[in-house]
Image (tube, rainbow, N blue to C red; front, side):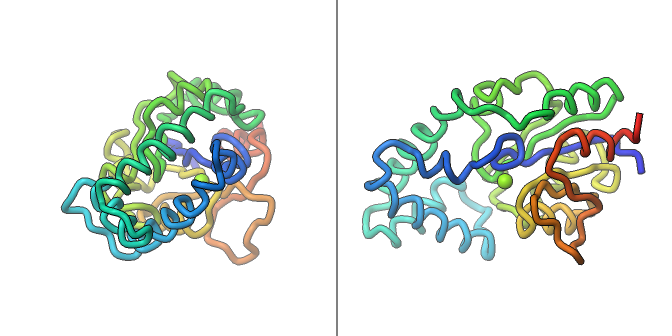
Length: 219
Ligand SMILES: [Mg+2]
């Protein structure tokens, strides 16, 4: 199978241990309730998207209910604790070994490269040292449909000017990445140490050298 495009998830896919980094946000104790509430809200919004309104406003309205604060306060909390503080950490995070070599090989082969994250991209690719590889990057927050909804997968394919059927999606979450990309008609490579025996991914891997071989053939 030849792919015209390869699209990557960000957290846990371009770099390891993202939960550890999220947990290491300074003053974790005061943030702990916030991180948990945010996760709960995003699970609600994955099930019942509200795409008509700006995503951060929708998220803040739901979060306010969980935290017992005003939506304005919830909005400001997420902005300062998550999107600003967490994002600062990206300057010290190293990407997975072998990732850059794989990107270089894909680029040389003429494959279009994209990124799709459930969180804003902002400066994270630059801070990870992964600037300049991508023809398109998108946060599902921009569409209002978090993964595994197919909408954002279809949108990133459109941004790249390719069909989902000629696209390989690479992600670490079975529920969100693998099932989401599949529902949009993409092939999927699952980055995991525990491959699903009867899973729907075309390929599972732990080492980017193996992904490179899967995409380009053994050369
Ligand atoms: Mg991920």
